[in-house]
Amino acid sequence: MRTATVRDLRNHYTSLLSWISAGEEVIITQRGKAIARLVPEKPDAPEKVSWGSAPEVTRDRSGENMLSAQESLDLIHEAAGKW
Image (cartoon, rainbow, N blue to C red):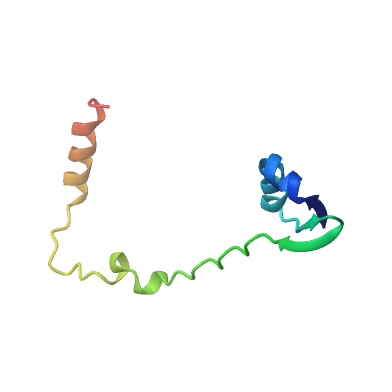
């Protein structure tokens, strides 16, 4: 935990912000008495992803045309020279 004066807060706030972003608490003092405490925000918990319910997984592909192996190979050879 770091301590800074009101003057430090006014004149060197970027330093104080770097301390806070590094995870430190900063006590602000005025005439030797603590008047405020700056604490870093807690990061939000990452959201859980349910891949089983993703639209890409649950999409009905039964009506889509599937390329044969030869059609796939022809497509790959056709596009090979364009890159």
